[in-house]
Image 1 (tube, rainbow, N blue to C red):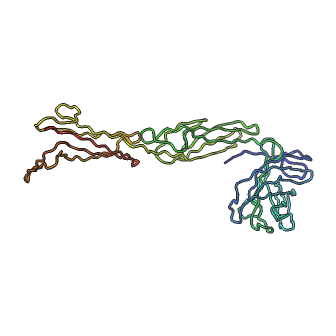
Image 2: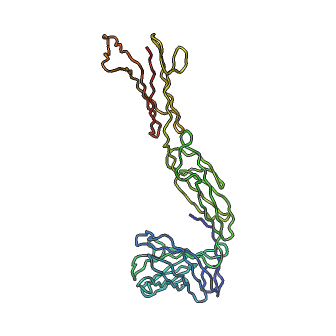
Image 3: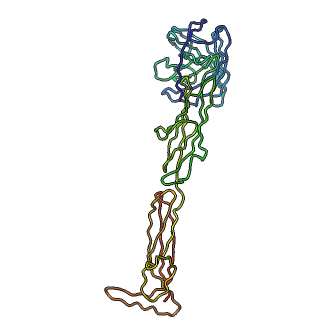
Length: 356
């Protein structure tokens, strides 16, 4: 996206607005675009070059590629007024505008006729020719009425005779577009921007937005991004108001399992134990310790079950009543699971031996 503050002057040759040198051959750069009858662009803007000869009243566009074939266009410049050309119909060029009658060779078709009308404005030491909707269909350009593309519009945007103050900005994410969560809830992401100035432009500012909200200024920022996808935008602006914006999507994910550790604590001493070596009743606290880089409180649950060691032919005696049941055990086995907010799971198992 570019926003440019423009002014205008008059070219003496044909009486239309321009700052190109009258009576000379001027270098030209720009882009070519084609729209279908409902306004959809049928290609990405194609860079073009050529010669703008105001003394001859012509524009010669160097060959460019369209669907694998060379496009060669010659344009007859038209001053304000109403103009009719075979195969193209009629076009009206308003005062202050420049018109063009385009004849194009492409593939097996020759002399495909079309009209175009430009608004012409001054940018730096050059003139910018911006195509307008000259037939009122809401689409830049003038719909063709003959040739292989009836209803389609060709739109040439031209920069003629000088340098155009401009800026291109590149957005960089050194850590990659997908990064791992590194602290509770997300991670801090390093974002950098490089602004390339053209045509003598001077950089005015670089500003950032994350998910549509202001995120800072300068050539680099380090915002905290929560889990999930985030739209990051950077805009570079020159001192004369030309802007360029680039955006990307950064995804913060959590793929790391939480840690999990099971401890048995003797409540009488507060010490961790791995076995009970006493015939008396012991009180043991089971601690399920879990930690996670991204989730400060993983969900933890566990189960405990008695374990009885046996040998072949041994008889296990279980004696009980309604109130309680006594089972001789040789160990307690605890199995636990920890799950973080992203669904990552970890399991641990520990055994407390009981020596009778």
